[in-house]
Length: 272
Image (cartoon, rainbow, N blue to C red; front, side):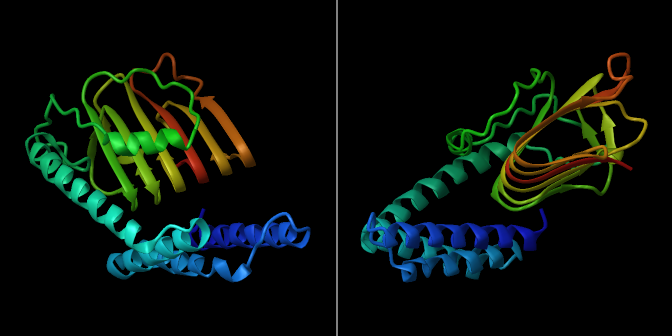
């Protein structure tokens, strides 16, 4: 899903909400004022600026839009929200300080050159808060095979994850992202195990995986709203699911298992 398409979808959702609200107001079921939707404009431009890299202005606009929406729609007082945000911010930064100290001892960048020594004890976990938030979205995914050995975990609430330049070691990888795009080029990977496994979960964005034609792969992909494109086979709509594997997968000495689950966006796995 391209960035412009994502914006179009968000605008479409807002228009639908406005239409439903006006209809229910017209038959006297609720009281609806279309002008109460104006904070959505702040949210839209905030997320747009954030995605362009303008994190300060994007964060300010998104925060203001959220505050005004809570006040207008749910009668939440702005000063109460302010104190809540401050308290959550303090907890977050305190936790990040503790986590970053631990990360300095264990974390190895995913894109590390092959010649660099790998840490066999690497086992960084996705933050509990992000995993809990993910579960609340009820994003279903078939159980992935248990990952053994070294496991690389990368997570981000907002932002892109690209693994397309430089050689990198691949054994087992877990990627979690809230809003953003994921791009992985497996032609750059040096597979460390007989069956390397990649698990990718996300809320909103695009996931693109490039696969060499001579690499046996198994693909399990699911999207709630969006398009699936797996080696030329395309599906679109709601709650789409695809499972495919190479003919030589079972007998291959080196192979990759892909498990991908997305709430809104496009999933594409294609040969290069």
